[in-house]
Image (cartoon, rainbow, N blue to C red; front, side, top):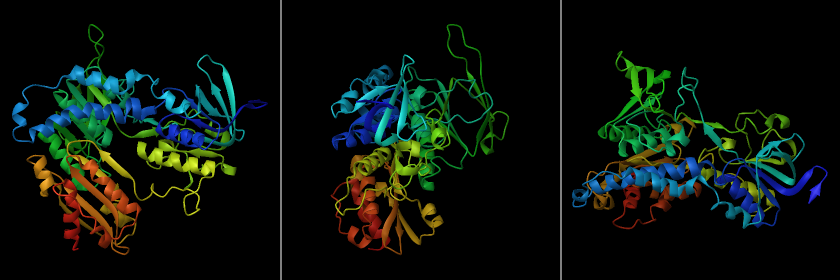
Length: 487
C-alpha cells in the first residue's frame, strides 16, 4: 500500500542475479512482501555473461578432447567444430539475452519486480528507484534492504587499454566470431577458461599473460603447472611473471572491421624486443572483479561507494547500525562465486525471516572462511575446496598433505588413455580432519562435493576411511589418498 515515504514492503532486494533471486524467493515463501529492483536482466551476470555462456562455449571442445582420449572413438573424429552451431547453442542457453523465462521464478512466488536503478536514500530501509522513463519510485522496507548487485570486470590502469576497447567477460562470452589472434590478460579461472575455449573453437594464436608466477595462482601450485602444460600442448602460449604495460589499437579497417591490437609487455617472458610485443585481433581482460556499488547511494549510509560491503556472519553490513542492511553474493566480497552467493542468500533470508536451524541457533555463515568449493572448467579441470597446503600453514595449522595421481585408478583408465591429474588432501593433524582438497584431471568437478561434505562436517579421517567408493569410478581416488595418508 502507499505510504508517506513510498510503497511499503517487508524486504527490498537490489539486484536480481542468483543471490538476489534466492534471498527474495526465500523471504516471499516465508510470507513476506518482497520487491526486487533490477536494472538489467533477471538472472544476472552468471546467466547471461558468465558461468552459463562460458561453459557452453567450453563444452564442444571438451567433448572432442574426451573422445580423442578413447581408443576407437578418436578415429570417428574427422571434422572440425561447427562454430556457428556453438554460438547458436550459446544464444539458446542465454535465452537470446532476454529474461522472460526467468521472471516467473520471482513473480510466481509473489515477488514484485521493479525495473530500474535502485539507490539508498540515507533514510533507514528506504530505496529510491529511477525508472527507464526517468520517473522516480520510492520504496520503503519494514524489515530489511538487501544489496545483491554483484561485480563487473576490473579494468587495470594500463596506458591505452580503455581506448583499445578490450573484451571483458561480457564481450567474450557474447562473441559472434572467433578472433584469429587473441591475447588474454589474466590467468585466473575466467582467463584460463576462455583462452582454451577460443583456441578449441579455432583461434590460431592464443596467448595468456599473467603477472603471477603461474596460472591459477591461488590454487595448489601443481594445478596451475598442469594447466600450463596442457595449454602449451594445444599451442596456447603462456607468459607468467609478465605484465602488460601499454596497449594500442590501430584504426578501423575498411568495412568497419576493428584494427589490430599491439600489446607491450615487461617481465621475464618479455626479455627480447620480439617477445616484448604481441599483436592480436582482440585483447580479453580477465584481471579480477570490481564490486558494482559505485551508484548505490552507499555514501548516504556511511559506506564507501565502489567498494565491497563488509558484512558479519549474518550477512549484515557491519557499518550500518540497527542491522537492516544486508549484502549477499559478490558484492560483499566474501567469495566471488555464484553458488556461494546463493548460499549467503539463504542465510540472509533465514535471518530476516527469523527462521532458525534445528538446534534453535540463528542461521549464520559457516562456509565462507573454510569450505569454499570452486571449479575451473579447463582441461584438465581444477576442482578444489577449503585451504591449499600453503594457506593452511600460513593460518598456523599443523597440517599434513598427501597426493596421488588422479589417473591412477581404474575408473580413470576406463574413461580413456593419457589420463593426467593429481588429487591432494590437506589434513589438520591436531583435529584429524580435512581442511582442504584439490583434484585435477577430467571431470573432477564431481569429486569435490565429497570433500566439501568432509570439511564442513569435520569428519575424522578415520571415519572417512569407511566411506567406500564404488568400483570402477574415479572416486576411488579417495581410497588411495587415505591409504597414502596411512590408514
